[in-house]
Length: 293
Image (cartoon, rainbow, N blue to C red):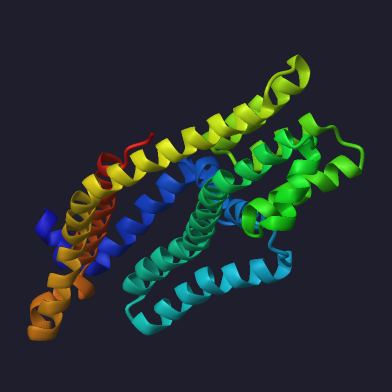
């Protein structure tokens, strides 16, 4: 029965279409919610992260760029596969979904890198603040010295904190917003320490030096872990790439050998299964080699 269906595409395609329609109808709300999160929801997240990175953006331009990267590339792949409608629909849909996800992944990576840069700069920034407090300056005056002496993300963040204080916001509230914009443990520790000592009193300079020491020790551990897991990370990348490299080699050496993968329904199902298993394997290997400190 299965062989008969696979060999008879005129019967298999309508049955497949009916099955897709029934499943889609029964899960319409979930599908619409998923599409919204992957499209407009992804755009809103991209805009939010770009705002956190002090990047001026135009909502319409971002929307147009994401539409071109998703539906534009998807339509292009559909036209390339024409007149093979099923293959075009499959690869076009896959590229469209990836087009919505890739910008968010890239912007998220840039934002995380910026947060890490803020933490790295805090070593020098808090040292400047500690010296300022020792010389009799207040916390805000010490932050002004950091803004004058340092650029980069930390200077931007401290500059925004000072602007909010000048507009009437309290130091505690401005620092709390800083911790929300940069959700890192070391930033949270700095903000919590300053807010508590402002209420109870204490040696701010000593607290800043303690935070600097903690950040340096944490960075040493991170570097040690990265060195220990570098080999496992490289092996994971190689394992994920091997099937695609072999497919490319076979496509060049003997195109007729791999042609059924792209011209038959069974081949498309096999490709989809391969991609699914590769993604699952890559995610699991990444989780194994990722150690949080």
